[in-house]
Length: 192
Image (cartoon, helix red, strand yellow):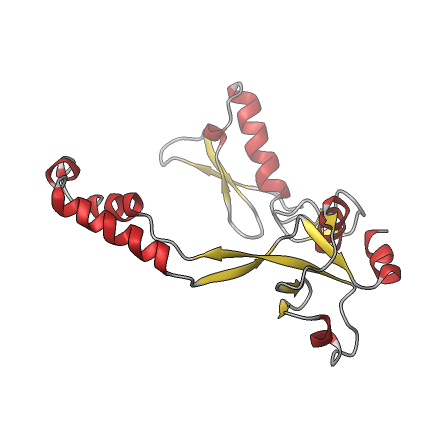
């Protein structure tokens, strides 16, 4: 913990802001809904503890700034909540090295195969006419969306709908709410 730097307005002795003595990050009492004294105390506490070591809520180990739980404990929490499933033959991903695979044999060349994988879900690439139009309207005057209604806009929406039906492109993404256990002993160690 470092002593905070008290910042005042020019010509005033009243504290206005408090800065971390280590990194300079500023804490303002005006962001707190509290009495004036409590708001200033909260800003002082924020500036004082800004660069202090933070500890994991689960194991007590040191964590990076702005985290309350370390990476291994976050992984443990995620795995405990995940539903165990069998591999269904679709894509899966090893959580640790982000290696996508379409079969268990793809992990055979690894010195230490993963203890678990997540099945993946496929998300098709789709365009959204409303989002595209709204995005383009943001650069124009407020009433532009009323001006562009009509048969030309209907044609654009129909073209986008046809594109969405025709495209099979997309991306695979891990479904961390489900887990495929590949090594029971190592998985049991992970979830502790």
